[in-house]
Amino acid sequence: MTHLIAACQGLLAVVFLVSAASKLRGGQALRAFATSLASMLPVRGDRALPVAVAVTAAEVIVVVLLAVPPTRGAGFAAATALLVVLTSGVAVVLTRGGAEPCRCFGASSTPLSGRHLIRNLLLIVVALAGLTGPAGQHSSTWSIVALLAGACAGLLVTMLDDLVALFAPTPTSWRRPDGVPSRGRGPGRTAGRDQPDIYRRRRTPAP
Image (cartoon, rainbow, N blue to C red):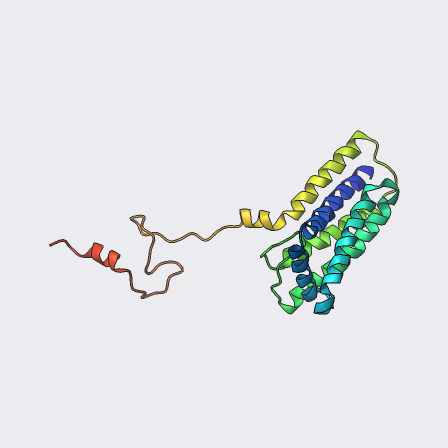
């Protein structure tokens, strides 16, 4: 159980640390996050920036609470509450059919989708699992290993969109048998579309 709590602690600490750092790196990043909050939560436009600042401050507090052994339980509780609020906002956006980009970990053009909802729900499960453990410092070697493993897992969570974009299949252009990219009919092309003169000249027999 101690190892599990350590892994949960490392995972959430890294997730909230990266999230807070991505918003504090500049005013533009914080304003972009405020814009996304305005569509996720019942917040008026003029209050979106103060709410964004409050959320970012809460993320920093979660990291500090998780890092100090006596307050680790409070850190898990604060992480759970914050994740529930943000996950509810994601669910609202998806229900409305919105395409607001995910600004959880900085600037991103990837719109919110079901995977972000699942990600947040899993993070809530991790935070709740951390609440079941006793307070105290991880002293054993395996607990430290579990803490580092959780931190690595947390880093992967923050890179979810990048990993999906890296491994997602990309559309390939259709090529003619001679290897020249098609300009006419083919997959993804409109039937009957005229080909450029260069291809028509190639088919014209030489005098």
